[in-house]
Length: 128
Image (cartoon, rainbow, N blue to C red; front, top):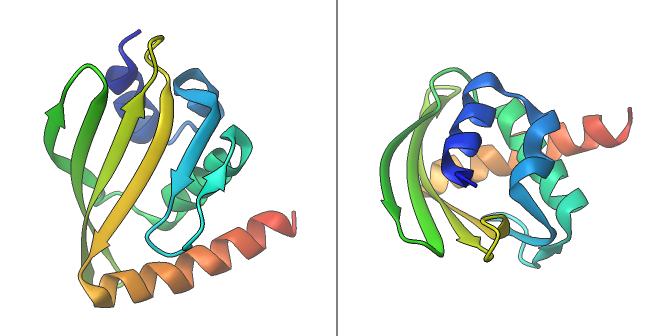
C-alpha cells in the first residue's frame, strides 16, 4: 500500500470519505490543541475532517521525510491572514496503515487561531 500517495490524493481532493483507506482502526490522533490523545479511527477521522474544512486552498506540503515506519510532512497554509506552519507526523503499521497521527503547529498566533476555528468546526459538525 502506498499510504502517502493515497494520503496526498485525499488531501488534494478533500475526499474525507477515504480516510478509512489509510487509517488503522486503533489509530491515535495527537492534536496541537487537545492535550489528551484521541483514541480510535472515528475520532481521528473527526479531527482530520475538521482540519480539512478549516484549512483552505493555500494548504500545501512543502517538505517530506519518510522511512518505512514514519513520515514527517511539513505544511504551510494561510488562514485569516496568519501563516500557519506545521508538521504531520505519521506512524505506519506493517500493512502501511497510519497508527498514529501527530500534528504540531507554529507560531503561537497560528495555534490560537486554529484552536478557535477547530473548536467552532467540531461544534458545527457535532450539531449535524
